[in-house]
Image 1 (tube, rainbow over the protein chains, first blue to last red):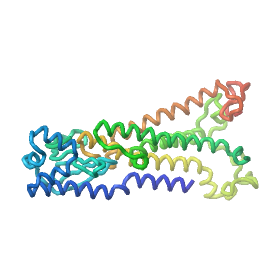
Image 2: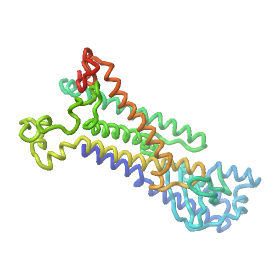
Image 3: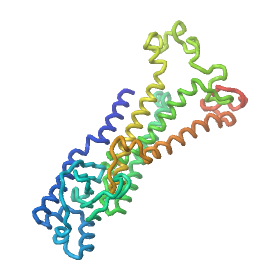
Image 4: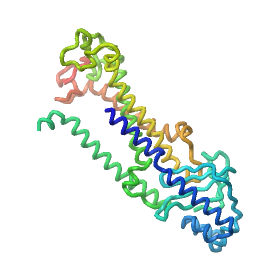
Amino acid sequence: MLRTLLALALVTLLVGGCGPGADRATARAVTERFFAALGSGDGARACAELGQDTRSKLESQEQKPCREAITGLGLKSAPIAHVDIDIVKAFVRFSNGDAAFLDEGEQGWELSAVGCKRQGTPNEHPYDCDVED
Amino acid sequence: MRTLRNHGLSLFFLAIFLAALVGQAFTGQDSFNHAQAAGHADSLTIWRYVTSSSYWADVLENWQSEYLQFTLYIWVTVWLVQKGSPESKPLDQAGTESDEDQKLGEHATADSPRWARAGGWRTRVYSNSLVTVMLTIWVLSWFGQGVAGRIDYNTQQIDSHEAAVGFLRYFTTSDFWNRTLQNWQSEFLAVGSMAVLSIYLRQRGSPESKPVGTSHEATGTEG
């Protein structure tokens, strides 16, 4: 019985939080690479960090290739305050209150939405994103 | 063969528990991946799914309610009675009963469990060990439901481009309480139904039933 209780506690810890440390670091790195590429004017490298659906929607929306469209949006970087990993989804909150969202796919972690601004209470109202899938 | 016979009840339920857990893994994976495909996202392998919070939130929300059910049932049947039910003690025996009834102290026998014979704090602990362990498992699995459920809930939040919620905040959300209460209501209904239906209905040979020919008025009698 004691072994059962210990196993239950261990499962809880593993599922809850001990696992996604590497994912958290990767999601942070993807986001930082995106903004670093934007900062140096490299639209192609920035677009490489976006998911396919996000790139397609941006190109459809702006009627130009992603590498040109992404640098014209005026997206601003800020220090990352918090990264939350939830199975195959990630939420990145910046120190200025803005956010970015990532999905984990076969290609690894990719940005699904970026340039997201708060609209009311963040837990209850969707962010308004400049680029999203 | 004798082991199988003597432990058939626990072995049977262990087998169907494992079968159901495995079945839940595959059906849950399929359901999860269906939602992933609808959102143009990649599927999870079975191993990735059974180590995910989505699977464990679903498992633990059910475990916690079952252990709460037994915790409450074991504990309240010390004090509350139900006339005519084999699930109840006789009407005049509500409470923790005498040492003689419970085979404690001078009434313990040579084959009484060691801590029942020991006296003092050991006997006090042992006298409440069933509720204590059930309660502990309930608390741990309910906590686990919260931990895993938060992550599962946050995947939906993120899909909707809403902020992920923190650990303490999740315990105040309707998602947590909906998962909790939908399980609690069914457990309480099942136990209550059993207590009442067994007054009037019979199952020959089952210790959960009164003997078939026993009066509806008879309380605390098992077959």
